[in-house]
Amino acid sequence: MNISRNEALALLHEYVQSESLRRHCLAVEAAMRAYAKKYNEDADEWGICGLLHDFDFEKYPSVPSHPIEGSKILREKGYPENIITAILGHASHTDTPRESQMAKCLFAVDELCGFLTALAHIRPDNFSGMSVASVEKNLKKKGFAAKINRGEIDRGIEELGVPRAEHIELTIKALQGVFKELGF
Image 1 (spheres, rainbow, N blue to C red):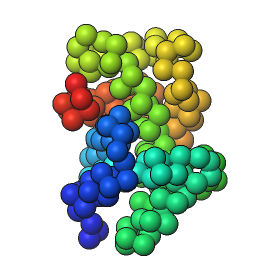
Image 2 (image 1 turned 120 degrees about the vertical axis):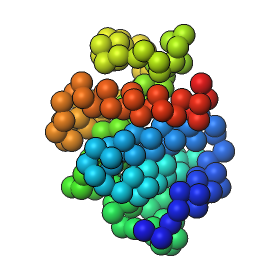
Image 3 (image 1 turned 90 degrees about the horizontal axis):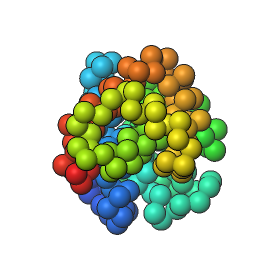
Image 4 (image 1 turned 90 degrees about the vertical axis):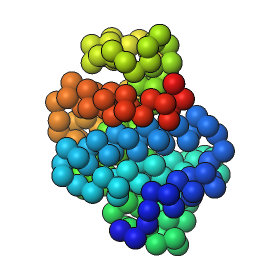
């Protein structure tokens, strides 16, 4: 891949002004890098996929524009088709099949990263000491982080085909590694 993380980060900053959305993209990047390592894939490529998955959301927030408009921009800039397809697949309304491992991982970590970050905000020690049990307990609280689509979390885990606890644990650890970048 000819595109560096710095180039991808510059693109993110060009399109995203919201600090919370930038942090979400950084969280998803970290989770994607962790999964790339697990599957012996290119961590930079997978990380860029996570970093840019929502880069067009501020400019094109409505369905069906996001991430379709973003995919056009990425094509114009020469991003690899596997990254673009995975980004399209993270939004169920595009009807883009999640066939690659990268696409399945992106879908599986996206909503979970949002949930874990919301949970970290109410914990005195943010991600430190966060457990699968505490995540599961809070996922059952419909009023907590109500905008997080729990059905997509469940479907992502199912499509990825990994044990639920393993998926949550890997994602927690990935976010623990970047907690400062996430504003904690």
